[in-house]
Amino acid sequence: GQNIDQPTEMTATEGAIVQINCTYQTSGFNGLFWYQQHAGEAPTFLSYNVLDGLEEKGRFSSFLSRSKGYSYLLLKELQMKDSASYLCAVFNSNYQLIWGAGTKLIIKP
Amino acid sequence: DTAVSQTPKYLVTQMGNDKSIKCEQNLGHDTMYWYKQDSKKFLKIMFSYNNKELIINETVPNRFSPKSPDKAHLNLHINSLELGDSAVYFCASSPRDSPGNTIYFGEGSWLTVV
Image 1 (spheres, rainbow over the protein chains, first blue to last red):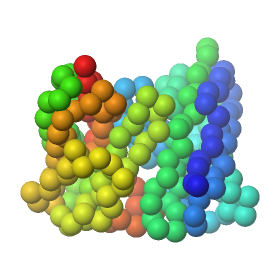
Image 2 (image 1 turned 90 degrees about the horizontal axis):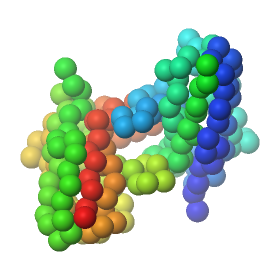
Image 3 (image 1 turned 60 degrees about the vertical axis):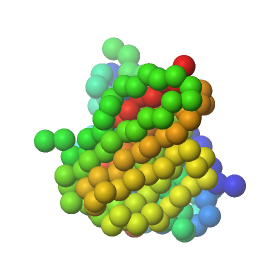
């Protein structure tokens, strides 16, 4: 089968750094997405990784290791508005997008 | 301007009814999708349309039928609604059905079957 594993929930403090991990087992790999979804809203695009390494975009960075089937999303200088669910999704060899259940991130003052 | 818009946003209906959710995108994208997000928050693809042709039809009940009158629209019709159909349905679009292209989501339609 194919699956994406992420922690269900994480808590962090405003101003701190948090790392959300994602491991995947899929039939082939053609890239990995991270999306942010606020409660009651649609997912919005954060990042796309297809090669190994770190992609930095402002306060958010995404890392990929294809050999380990592993990615993480790093959020720096956390703000209250970062409280949301973060969804990891992988394109498999059939170009099907397989979604994780998401990690609910709670930011405390 | 809303890039991907879907209506209605909220829908409460009785079991056995037939309902439709409409979706329109003004991004000029070639591919449109319908996703279902259940109570466990998994996003599952239901259908994918590329230039009005169905290219993915995941194993969803045939009570669900996508209808695409043109490239900018992909409507979802559901017959004989069941309690288990209660979920959030997201319409989405992307420039083409290939890796690396960002998928843009509509705001979601909350369907509750009672």
